Image 1 (cartoon, rainbow, N blue to C red):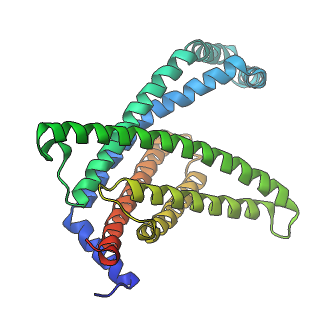
Image 2: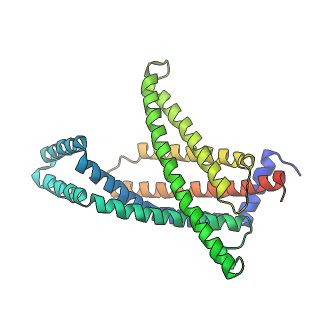
Image 3: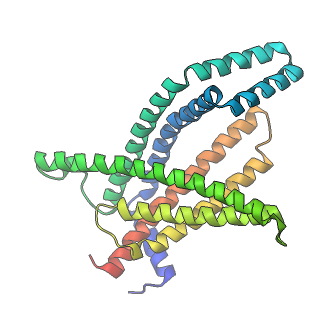
Length: 287
C-alpha cells in the first residue's frame, strides 16, 4: 500500500467522510463559542483590575475621558465614567467568576474533543465501556485529562504572549536591516505563530486520542494544520483591515460571521488532522 503524501491525504479524507468528522467539528465550534463568554468576561475583569491598581492605566483613563468630553460632551463622559467605575468595583468578583467559568467551559470543550477522538478511533464512550467500576474509572480519568489539558493550554497561552512580546521586540530591533521594519516584524510574527501552532496541534494529536501515538506519527498532521491555521488567521486579519473599520451594524455582524467561519475552518482542520494521524499511525505503526 502506497505511503505517498497524496495517498495519505486521500485515505485521511475517506476516513474523515466515513467517520462523519465534519459534524463533530461543528459541535466543537458550539463549545468554543460557549467558552468565549467567560473569556470575554475575564478580559473585562482584567481591564477593571488594571484601572484599579495601575497608575499608568488610571492616567490613560483620565486622558481618554478628557478627549471624550471634548469631542462628545460631558454627558457621554459621565456615562463612560460610571461604566468604568462599576467595572473597577466588580473586577475582583468578576475575575473569580470568569476564571471558574472559563475552567469549566474549557474542560467541557476538551472533554468533547476526547469523546470525538474516541469516536474517530472506534472506541466506545465511557458510559458504555464496561461494568460500572470501569465506567466510573474511565469517566474520572477523562475529567482529569480534560482539566490537565486546560492547565497546559493556559501555560501555552502564557508562552504565546511571551513569544509575541519577544517578536515585537525583535521587530523593533531589526528595523535597521535592509528589509522594511513592518516586513521584518510580519515575518517574525508569522514564523513564531507557525511554530506555536505546530507545537499546539502536535500536542493535541499526541494526547487527545485514546491510544498511545508516537511523535513521528503526528508531525505531518501537525504541520498541515499549523499552515492552515496561519493562512486562516492571515485571511481573518486581512478581513479586519479591509472591512473591519466599518462602524455600522453590518460591519459588526460581518466580523462575527468571519470569526465563526474561521473557527469552523480551524475545527475541520483539527479533525482532518486527527484522521490523518490515524491513517499514518495505522500504516506505519501497525494496529
